[in-house]
Image (cartoon, rainbow, N blue to C red):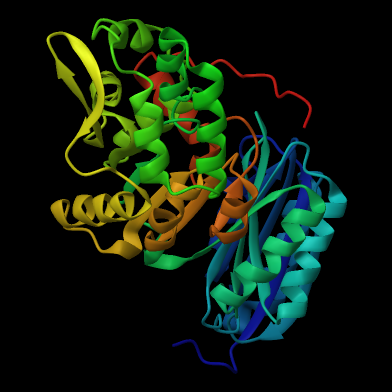
Length: 407
């Protein structure tokens, strides 16, 4: 524990970044015998800011002279402030606040930081996680009541048109996780039951029931049976045709690929059909898949289902089952979904994310993503765009920059 009476110097150096600035400065102060108590450096558009908290004991005056001389010789601006002791200990209630916008306006950042201040929390550090396809910044804060701050910032997110996630910081943000996704309108852009209904000639009827079920206006199990009944008589070969037409959500492959690189477990749980979900999960190398099973007799769909229906309760149960199989606590689970039948799963997870979701889901989830890129979820987990691209480059995977449509 540093002596609080120890005399210290806070040195701040800024100017054009170039190789050797930091090493030259430290080479010069090494001869003075200074002790480094804290150090932080950031470069924004080629402008470097370096902050050092140093202690030199009896060589205090000499240290001041050296840092000023070296910074001046490098053409850098410098300020030196005298004080005593180390940094004040950080308070508890550490959290990561991620703000995602397209665009991310200064007015939104001002509103978010004002809310944090009014909450009584302190912003200790800020870093950018991504610039495209959305701009994302992460605020490292302390002194927060995470549940209360999450509620307060969700109100600001709705007003400002940004997405905000509040998560525990520290060890809770590191290590292996289980990420469980809904499929229809989340992992993929389509509703599989609607695609099947096109072949059965019941598209309009099924679409109306699907929309009502996703809004929570109808019991999901009852509505699913009604929709599947309209498929009676379809040849089983139609399933292959539907699988071939499915469109992955932009960023889906990147999300799954990156999570797998991190050693995370990835699962899908769907109110759709395992005949379609299973092959898709295998293609993406997803670890677990759970969905409804269609009844087939003589090569034709009977219009019925086999086994228990995967409804909102079934999805939550699947999440818990996957977590138990992976020996992970529920606090280390993430769930992503868009419909009312995802609500139990989102509530059970350590972090529930509403992805381009219905209003009722956005209101109840821990956070929401309202841009059309599924890999934006990675930013909410503290993963930077640069880290994703570096990993892609290492194994030769192309990562083209998508253009963002107007919101």
